[in-house]
Image (cartoon, rainbow, N blue to C red):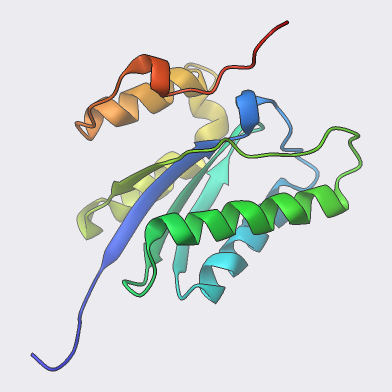
Length: 155
């Protein structure tokens, strides 16, 4: 075969540091557009981006040219910088250190897009913690609960 053919579709989920509610409705859609631009610059194709005040979901096709960890490092670093340059809050914006990335079959893209679009409604019934643990279990990811979430130390 003379060419390489891929269809690498991922559902990516990560939260703000300590799941602080720091994503403002005022600039949320601009943030999603900015992240889409970062993905495009890394030869990705954003399919759906959404979330709530404390976390984000990204459905995207990624190029096999780049490791997913490198793409997400750039997405998180660039978007944090963008937020901190524009945000009026005195608190510095940060994303959590890790992320969840799950492969998605082409046949499930519409379902995942709908799921991402309905995040606000979904989280009236379920917390981010509950949602993320459900996603890990659904994708049969082995984990130890003590390593899943960064918890803020209260002194």
